[in-house]
Length: 93
Picture 1 (cartoon, helix red, strand yellow):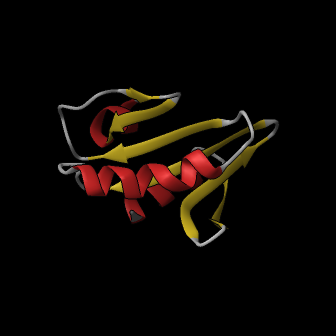
Picture 2 (tube, one colour):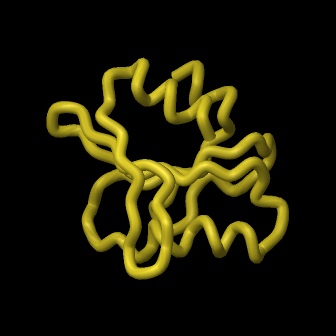
């Protein structure tokens, strides 16, 4: 998680930790008018973990980008508008 935090800071984002209802949002980011939400999870290998990581993002009712960053290399890349990205690819964007 620290790698993602420091990369967001390096890219110039203000980074906040968030909470909606009883669910934690790993990072809420903001730079100029660009905002997005980030969950970080080493692996989304089972349905329970995937649901846990998606839940706070589904609870947010705005239209800003929502992503999950994972070390997994094989996964569905989009769950109802929530993007899932491999950390290595994300770091190279």
